[in-house]
Amino acid sequence: TKNLEASSGINAEYGDTTRTLSNLDPQDFLKLAYIKMKGVPSNNVHYEYKIDRRKDRLFSTFIPPQQIEDDGGKIIGRVEEMKIFEQELAKLLEPEIDDGIQSSSTEQVKSIVMKIESATGMGKTRLLQEMKNVAEKKKVRVIFAAAGAVEHATPHFAIKALLVQMFRLMECCSATDRADVIIKFVEEDMIKEIYLLNELLKIHVGYVKRAREKDKKKKLTNMICYLFEKAAKEQRTMIILDDAQWIDKDSWIMLYEIIKRCRALIVCSTRPFPAAQPPMEEAKRILNAPFTKDIHLSSLKPDDMVMLACQLIKVTRLPIQLINILRTRSHGVPLYAEQLVSTMLQFKVLQVHTEKQRHDINRTGPLVTDTGWTMLFTRESSSWMVEVTGWSGCVLKFPALCRAE
Image (cartoon, rainbow, N blue to C red; front, side):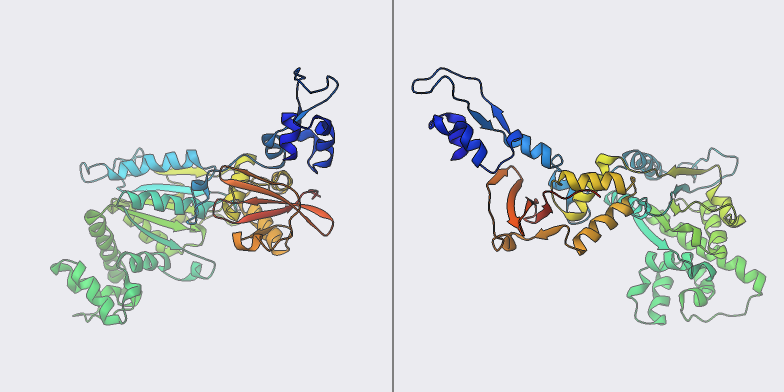
């Protein structure tokens, strides 16, 4: 009503007084040009309250709800990297010609290999998840393995993890069930070689005679390559290896043979290796090979950090104070932004309320609504608070006078 009075001039004597008593920031009012009207004094000043001024001054630009969906939303700031991936994925989906993929290097390989390298916290795993989602939409089988410091000394750990996922062996209740899955998959002339997988996959299949250790390693390699090759022919396959710097030596050796024999898309993510601890030679044959496509992740832009924070909190706008903190403290590293927001939520510097909880808050001041968002000023402990309603009915509450330091 006060805003209507101020902008319409109905009670002209309240024009300037209304602006003063409205508890709104004076800079959010626009001084109107005088128009001669009956009953309006010539020396009277009128103002129009501009909602957009307050919105632009206190909050970031509106983030579409589809960017902050519950399933993680669209990946932020990695457009170029995803374009490269989609180009390589398109090569995998092309009809097979001459039984293989031509490599630009002198070394003949059948697989497409990509390496994603960056420091900790730059979003390698999140990028891999987005690649997985894109591939699965195109009906590509995606199998995933991640290693750690413990698995670095476990022989064939990564290969075992890939096989378990590919054949869904985690759903089997016993060693016999696991063996039956493999037996049904392989051709009849390969059944006699399944015993080679006994130790690796914890199955129990009898064999006719014990092979020599040297022959057994070679036969195991041939058997595993056969499984991957047959599976890839039945359905296009993408292999993801997260934290590849921890992959064991035996898995690297086996993976190199798979790359040479099997048509698949293989994506490895790794941290930069320090000069004092270079990668093992078996890893260099793949990670530093001419046929491997390198992607180096850089820091995100400031606007991307704002969108990322909205995605983490699931709101469509952020207060300017929070934006300033993200820009000065996160340094473009997604992990830092996530830690900042999580810490603020933990210590109640930021408070997210559901729609039901909002009605229990003691409110003073005007309620301003806009498409997809709601802003509300409340007074708590003699300090002004700003609340922004998110697209999902949640509210972000932030101290209006909070300082970045």
